[in-house]
Structures are given as structure tokens and as C-alpha cells.
Length: 422
Image 1 (cartoon, helix red, strand yellow):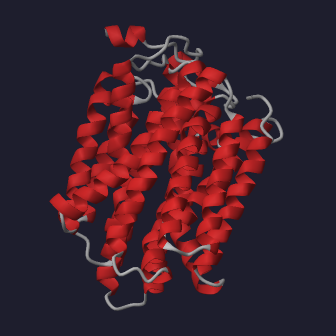
Image 2 (cartoon, one colour):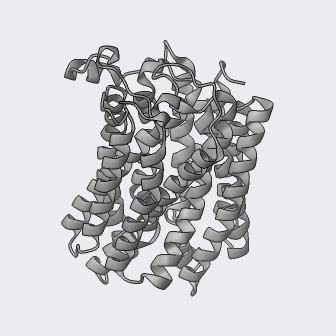
């Protein structure tokens, strides 16, 4: 027996035309607030400190490399988990819908892995449970992202997508504040973000409409079909390929510019109050991300243009990185944080909307968006290791930020090649 919400949901493969309401958007944004708090607080604070406690008096480059190796291993699993989860959710015939079981399962795995991560004292345990946490994050976010293309009409996707990016910045600052004030220490920090993840994702998971897939509508579910579906030909679908490439390039550039920011303050600027100043930079970054993501997302809907917003966003991030490379000063770093937030906020919201408009097949939205999501999560995973090698081998932090700028400009060029979306 179907519920009223299920009957109101758009058809499984049809393009949605009915605008989603304020409650849907509010619960969707709250879910992403919990997700980003649980994912970014460990990356920016808890994991580096946990690794540093384990290695003790090792040099900071050793700490960064160890952190980078752990992140890179988790990134390999993310590379597989995102598209596979999307493909499986495309084929799910559960009475609860296609996406809901994966949202719930991913949230539980993510939270449980974070809770157990709080007990770890050796690098192997840290690596294992952080990898499990990232798998849960990928399962959850792949299914949640697919709900946009399932339920949100094209002329509302910029604004709705901004409620992925705006909570990212807010989640980071809230998580860091909680972990440094109310829930201090490794165990309490991880436990707090795990509990908040479940509390914030739960309402959307339970309430959202989610159309059921009838067994006769399900695409083939064989290992061969699953593997073959992972390849989307850039020759046959060039706009999908250019959008994916621009995502990879811009996200690598952003990750290089932000992941080692604490180390830049400590060892690049010799800042005696580095941890406090990091919080200030995060606040600045947060304000500009929130303002840019919501305003740019809504404006792109109104103007029915996506590409120019993404291009400008990529250039802004590159300019911010150039400032950090050539003017290593705390005040200039604050200006760079503002520009980086402005560019990345605009990029996150509008690029997500752009991605939903270049998908090759309505029957494989989850899988194709899962491939797109690789370009968001994997750069964050590999950036610490790549950044550590750049700093150690290629001339320090100026080389790191210069490389970040190069990736930003390259991302702007890639998105300029998209033709089917204005």
C-alpha cells in the first residue's frame, strides 16, 4: 500500500516538474549540515591531531604524509563506492523507495565508523575506521544527491543545490567549534559529530517522497552490466566529460588551497596563534561560501545560465591561491579566504545544478551523479598527500598555492567547453 508521500513523488524516470517546498529544502539542507560536520571536522581537525598524537615528535611533514596516506587509501574506496552505490540505488526495488534505504544505511555506517574511530590509537586502526567512515559518507551522499535529479525541476536546481554547499561551510565551523569547546578530546569529538549526523539526516530520510521502482522497470543487475555502466564515453557525451573534468580540476585546486591551511599558518607564516587564526579564516570562508552559494544558485535559476557562474567561480579560486603563493601574510590570507569562499560557494551550488543537466540517461541518474561525486570527494582525499610532497619537494607553500591556482584556471577552461547548457 503506497503512502500519500509516495504517490506525490515524481515518476521514477520522468523529469520532475513540480517544485519542491520549503520543508523539503529545509530538511535536505539539515541533512547536508550533518554530513559535512561529520566529514570535514575530522579532516580539518580531529584526524590530523589524532595522527600527530600517534607519531609524537615526528616532523610535521611526517605527520602530513601519514595523514595523506590514510586519506588517499580512503579516497580509493570512495572512487569505487560513489558510482557503485548510485548504480545499485538506480536498481533498488524496495518498498521504501530507491534512495531511502541507501541514505539510511550510509548514515548508520558513517556514524558507527566515526564512533569507533574515536577509540583508535594506532595508524592501522585510524586508517581502517576512517576508510569505513568515508564509505558510509559516499553511500549516503550518492543517494542523497540523486534525489535532486529525481525530484527537483531544472529551474529550481541551482537554489536547491546551494543547500548542499552552504551547509558545507557552516558544518565545518560548527564542527570545529564543538570539537574545541564543548566536546573536547578525540572520543567526544568523534561521538558528537556521529550523533549529530544521525539526528540531522534522519528527518529527511523518513519524510521525503521516494518513488518506487517496479521490478519490471529495473535495469539489468549483473556484474557485467554494472561494470559496463561505469563507463560514460566522453566522445558520445562530451558535456558530461567536460563537466566531470572541470569538477576534478577545481576541487583538486580548492583542496590543495585549504587542506594544509593549518600547517601553512604554523610553518609557512610561523603564526604563534595558528589554531585560533585558523578558526578566524574558517569563519571568513564560511560567510562568503554561504552568501555566494545561495545567491549564485538562485540567480542562475532566474537567468537560466550555469556555465558562466562556474567559470567565474573557478577563476576566483585561482586568484585566491595566487595571493597566498606570492604574498604570504596573515591579512592577505584572510582576503584569500574570502575570495576562496566566494568562488567555491558559487561553484558548489551552480556546478551541482549544471551536473544534473548533462546526465546521459534518466534511468542511471544515481550512477552518473555518483561518478560526478567522485570529483568532489577524491580530491579532498588525495590533496593532503599530494600537498605534502609539493611542499617538501618543490619549494614549500608558494609552490603548493601556485599549483592550486593552475588547477583552478584549468577547471575554468574545461567548463567553458560545455555546450548544451548556457
